[in-house]
Length: 170
Image: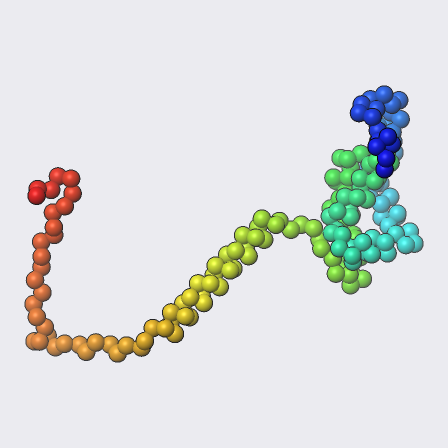
């Protein structure tokens, strides 16, 4: 794209009000009607195959559903609130279809921070286990000290604890 073909800053403010589809009232305001419309669209020949193709090539399911719903909002079919309401049902519909088709896909609900923390904890536990095994191998096996008979034991003298601290006399 050439630099002269870009929109000028503030150009959207000079456009005719309500000239965009998403600026007008939506065509569908009932979530059930909107969901039925999306399911009908996905039932058209080739639509679900395209969706499964994108899932198969690495697009996660959450992003796919968000794209479908954003497109409908931009076209003025329904508003964002309806998208938020119907997103879980549309997600499950496509997920079940992908499962039945045997498509390997990423659902898109992973939290990278939690995965890294879990991986770190696993690594720490594995390292502790390996260290314990190494220590067992390196430690020579010792015979327990022979137990001395009570007669042979020397009496233990108790020593007074050393007086230390700030107020102790020297």
